[in-house]
Length: 188
Image (cartoon, rainbow, N blue to C red; front, side):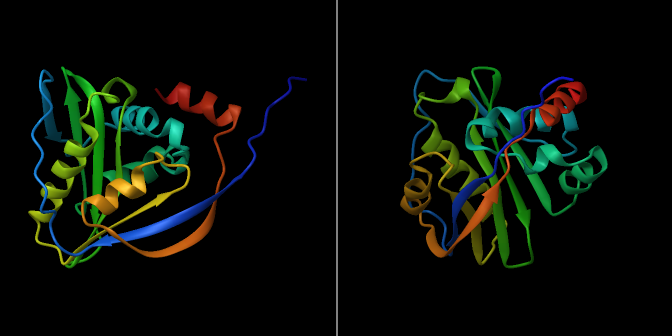
């Protein structure tokens, strides 16, 4: 009988933030890097899972990876959901995703870079571009959440661009088990 490693839960400290005015900062595109940000309406599930896994693996993003194809399709292809992909020197470098909760509130639900885009000085620029894109929809506020498993400077970066903490709480993240990782590999 094979030994199956089970994942243990990780306690996390969650911070919910809001932004009520567009950022006043401007940053140039880092030099000697070719970048493009493209909206991805109707994104194929395997490509989304690839982006989500590549960006989120080190930060323990698992929720979307546990969804069935039908569940994930319903979320991604919801008219209120929007995904844009960052390309760096011709390869996917990250993505951001937002969800229009109502007329006044938009949630920046996912944001991050893939390994090949880290260390190039584009993180701040990409977050700023993400926020500019959301503010073109004229919300009253943008909300997002981060936690202590995220990049060590994530909270500081959000605050630098105008987000303010509005609440904190505790949560549990259950990392993917070996069995779940195997199932993901089969999905492609």
